[in-house]
Image (cartoon, rainbow, N blue to C red):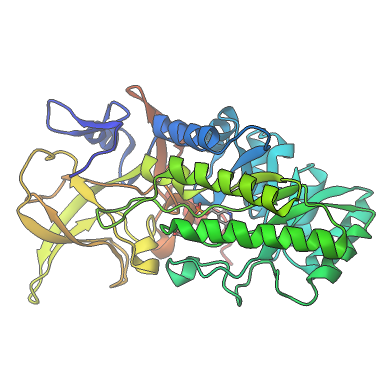
Length: 433
Ligand SMILES: Cc1ncc(COP(=O)(O)O)c(C=O)c1O
Ligand SMILES: N[C@@H](CCCC[NH3+])C(=O)O
């Protein structure tokens, strides 16, 4: 089993993360428990910041907060000097409550409500990423009403068919996101922005999908987008000041995943931009990228207590954990694959193939389909790796199961970042009549 750099095995044979014994964490904070390795989050932020830069080009790294967000995470992102992509009023509110600098916030969404837009405008977010022409009219109208001006990017769809799960592709020609760069109206839309007194169009945003391993998808997207930038300059006399090329960098969940060498890929991307803009004889815009998963996925693990096992008549060996699709819906949703260890038996030989099932009333409530583990017993602690992204943020209260707590670990210290939900939390908005 491959451990991450900041994990190790202590002399009790238990898994440690951030120098904290995971078995002790489970005892202290209860299970299921999301554990985040703060050192690794900070390392990942630095890797992006340091690799995605080059002389003469202005760059910015924006953390896509949909992957994992809470007040503590906002603080880390701010301290590491990244900006923040929010996609809803709730994400924006979280960032504002954490005192995240509003001018470093990018407000996304394909169907922002009026209330969300008002909150974004009034709190002075850095950029509103306008999804479509109707939204252009709405943002302009709201700015008129509020007497404000806003800097905006237009989300466009470059029509890149990135190789990933179809649910997380975002840039096929029939995607719900953005306006197609091939649309006949695109020039009209840009012209419309230019005529606006309230909306200051700075440039464009695109994002081709998530969990992408094929580097060439990123390079193709850059080339297509720069071609578009050049065309817009010729046709609309519009100089693109900013170009956000999105996130989507794939991470390793299991040995099957051949991850991208991020440092090399980021360097290649920026060099390609420099070279292409120079060849096209266009001004190089400021370039932004928007990683979510690659910042947080591998920094998170989930600890579960094993409640029991079951061998079915059909020959399956189940392990039952005290969470499930409520804290990690990705297996049920995308057939995602995970690796795990028995945290208190990490030195023992694997002896059995198990299926890890949750406690929801749903046959698809599976966390891991087939995994080799040592013989497990009731009360063992299972540590599932790489659950930092799109687990906590996509968790639910299905079956009225309270959401787990989140702790950040670093240098042997564990800090509670999100309290475990209680049954009282579950009914707090219910009205009995
Ligand atoms: C607009 C936008 N930006 C950034 C991201 C982050 O993607 P990832 O977590 O794959 O890096 C997403 C999610 O796919 C997105 O929709
Ligand atoms: N939720 C997806 C990623 C969606 C990315 C957001 N556009 C996942 O878990 O893989």
